[in-house]
Length: 116
Image (cartoon, rainbow, N blue to C red; front, side, top):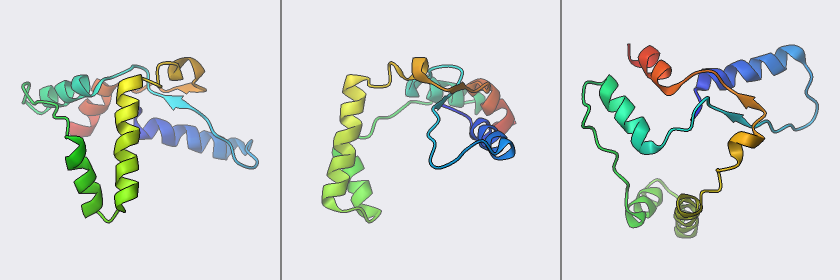
């Protein structure tokens, strides 16, 4: 997870430096790895609901929601398949080591500022 302000700061810095030509991809990560369970717990604590549960939606429910939002059946099925594969195989394990920028804003700091 990464705070949008950290992404904006990096983009603004690049625009001010004018050191980009063509298409450039830069990998930005937050300062800590946060699971969805931990993020939900932190959000619940900040909202005064420490027992707020993280609820995983069943694949068929996600597929139905995507279809309801106008996505094709094939597109919805592929999105669900992609997410299930990502959940099972952990392809992001090496992302932190490959990151170009580690942003400074931690989740609890973001929640404190965003939710008062």
